Image (cartoon, rainbow, N blue to C red; front, top):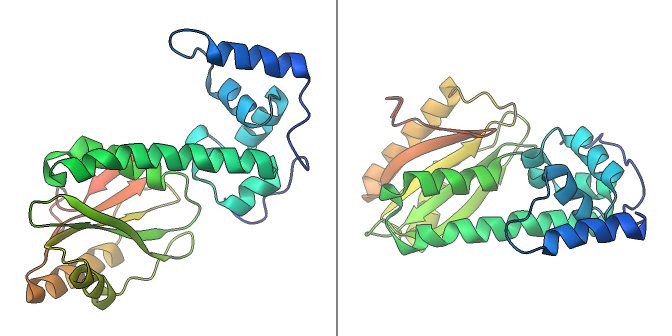
Length: 227
């Protein structure tokens, strides 16, 4: 979310106690939680439904709220709510990364897509990330290499390979997001992919795919025949 997002209120912690207690009781009731997205956000924002509606209006949707930068969340929702929202996203990311460490990434396409959507959907700027894999194609690390603007993140193939050697990686997946939510690979995306593939070939490090996250869509350059 751009930095011009304005604060809607200084702190979203002033909801009436009865409204907050009602939502808390629903959240603690036996069985599945029946709260909708707005009600869940209301609890994270201090129990105020109006505050939750304001946060959704500012960012557009739940994925964009959870993917927003810390500074924008603080400006819109206040510090306490921003901390809670950031923790929700981080805990979800950690939960989804576990299967990628436990079994070969290349046989877990849905798990990879779910993880990447949680990690990158809603991010306000392009991020270039690398998933480093061992010889059994288990995940060694997912690392943010660079963060750029709304439509560009700098990529340095030498740095990607240097880090792969440091981690003793045998293969990797490269990933970046399109904040504008258009999943179409650009000519620059395709050219950058080819440069990294060539750099890896010289070191016997395989680049299995380049994946683009655009909103809730995840596209594969390999599947599109572009690498």
